[in-house]
Image (cartoon, rainbow, N blue to C red):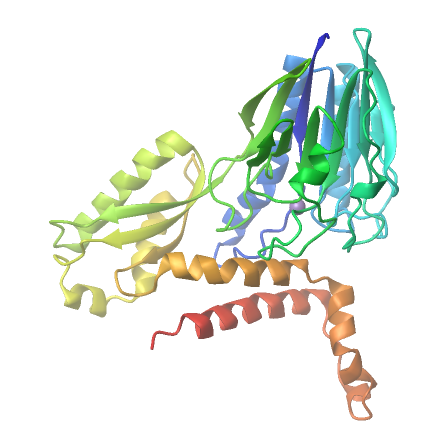
Length: 403
Ligand SMILES: [Mn+2]
């Protein structure tokens, strides 16, 4: 069989608002809010240069069901560049950009093929080889039922690729959308399964390759490390993957040893050296600092200055610099257990993130229909958002209270 080559990308979350970064100032926030677009442009540039046979995009192209106009225009421009380079694009929408949302319509060029709300087959011919793609778009936000039965078993001819935005059945860490088992996917006899939805890059199986490329740009502390997409080659039964980085700002954790440090100015130097070394390797980043061996810094030093003062001093050192560095937090020994807090916070944040205005309306329906509740003022969507952030913080505080 001829070798075919395509790019597999998912969870672009264009125009993600970075709501969790409330501590950042307006300049830093603006910089963060640009990052999903920068990551997307890196992908487009790569595609135009490398000329793959086609591209598959597997859901959550947009962050919100309103598909912000800015995101749509930037996406449309990207698709036009791919059209000029004669690269077909096959895409499906996910739970974040489901078809029941309300958005201003922006047209997409003719090289873009969108999967409808029912599993369907699309085909193209690459150097005489028939390539069949199967997928669907989310008709509404929640698709809790399995969609696997609707995917046909592959025939003998050509290549077969499945697109699926969803998660493994029984994965309790993530609200389950379009659940599947690896076995069910394998039973379809496809050459490749292009997955989306889970933001952590991973391979669920090798025969055939069942792959989450992860998202293209981290959006908060639980989406750490370098992000990107896969450049995939299929040659008969053989497959190879190459990861391509797109992330513009990396979320990361850095442990700093304060051994031998006695004075605050030495502490600043030690931190700066560690941060600069990491930034040289990672580029722009949002970093959580973890201090260790702080015995030399007397308790006085730590007590006299508040935690916010320490962090502000470091932040000032990096204000307005390139690469962009934002110090998200400083953890001192004994203040909290970061591993524990991550374990607890991930499901909490995910749950809150999955809430939309409808879920909220449902929840408070009773309150407003109550005799006395009719006179209450309604919360605006932005107040609801703030409430979610506060609720997550409150819950985390309660959970992490030390005995
Ligand atoms: Mn997603």
